[in-house]
Amino acid sequence: MGRYFNPDLTTRSLGGFAQLQHKHNERSGAGGSFIRMKVREQPEGRDWQGMTGYRIPPLKLTAYLELEPSEAWSNRVQATYFDGADYRLVGVASFGRRKVDSYTTVDMISQYQLGENDQVSMGIQNLFNRSTACSTVNNTSHMPAPGTVLTASYTPLVNAGVAPD
Image (cartoon, rainbow, N blue to C red; front, side, top):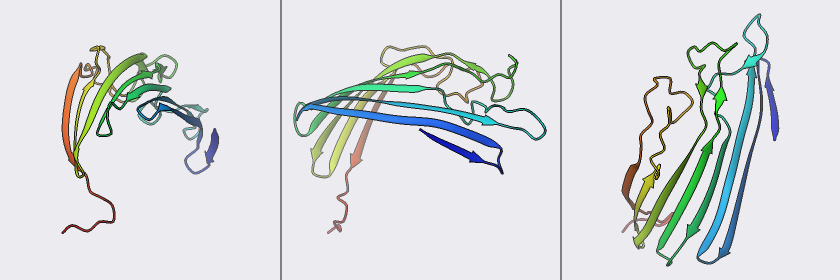
């Protein structure tokens, strides 16, 4: 945890981040992370107040399990919890100051290394099609976040320090 004070910006921040990883064996592991920030601002001539949701995310917890069936293939399932937060002042919604409900999503990703310099990835974001009012704190449009999304990518891997032929 750290504390930061900047008299020029009249903000005070307190936050923390923690990450835990454990390898069960060569082929499987688990882990998680935690992040939380609390920031207060003082507009000129006014009392201290919580900063808007545009700048400060709510509590976020992540947990995952990994399985590597082979050296070239890895799979991961991940759950992410986003805590709700009320950024309104005196219960009044305004720009960047809305009430955000908590939600949890589950994602899956599978990666396969085709060769020394090629990798393909496939994933499913929001596996259970969790309906959320927003995907980030700063979405004040009231548009729903995307439902289940299938992703696929190809990545040419470049070996650091090796010049191309």
